[in-house]
Image 1 (cartoon, protein in one colour):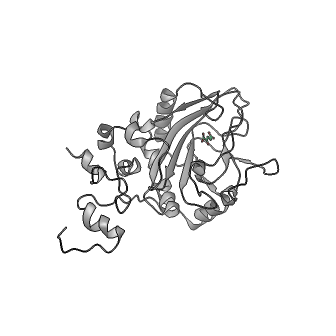
Image 2 (cartoon, protein in one colour):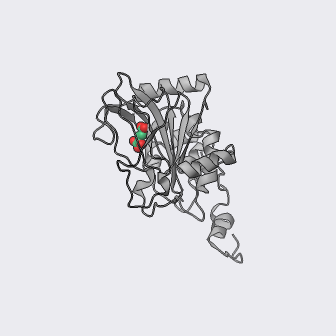
Image 3 (tube, rainbow, N blue to C red):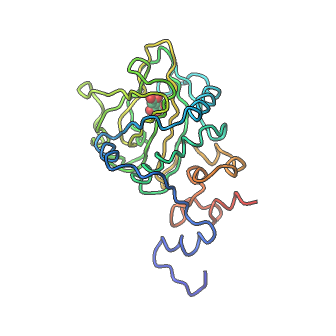
Length: 280
Ligand SMILES: O=C(O)CCC(=O)C(=O)O
């Protein structure tokens, strides 16, 4: 920057100054259809069918089963439910799902910003699990209602999701509810019935819960939760996934993991774009 250059607004500060070398990474996916977006806006969720090839799904499933941890420490994690966190530090078998072009397209259309990956975890709801507490994934953030665009979550099915084995319960349209409203007995839930390879994509304000499992088999899922880049992520991704692993990831995964700048300078490291940390 020369001394004579003037910065007219905060955005200029990014485009003319801080981002000299590393421009903002565009997260681009397949643009969703207007029918899909209409359903997402109305119900707060959509189910995308059969997004994965058999090979990708099987490799992802094997990796998830290998990584599953012990059962949960509280009612929310589920005393009969196994979880595994920090997945991108542990396997490359899920990269394609976390950055799936169809999901990126919906993120772009509905978050209107370069998203961050807030959390990615395996959830295997085991036999005997009780229904999870209904919640909205944006519930951590103030001013989340109604219709704030803080987050978007995805639940990928690796077993058939049935009403008996713990299919995610959704309260359609609940992302439009006012802040004080909670699901009550008068609010029926809908189970997200899915086949392996299907994905439930939902608004961060949608009330939902893991279901009860009355069968003798587990119900395996991968969930990936995304948030706007001005929010704190649930998993502290820059600690969870070390730079040596990030260096080997394909775009847009580093950006999803926090190697991005939200203009003008949110996310900088020592005054510079975090991508500089990945340079040799
Ligand atoms: O496993 C599910 O179906 C939902 C789990 C969930 O919403 C969560 O743990 O935040």
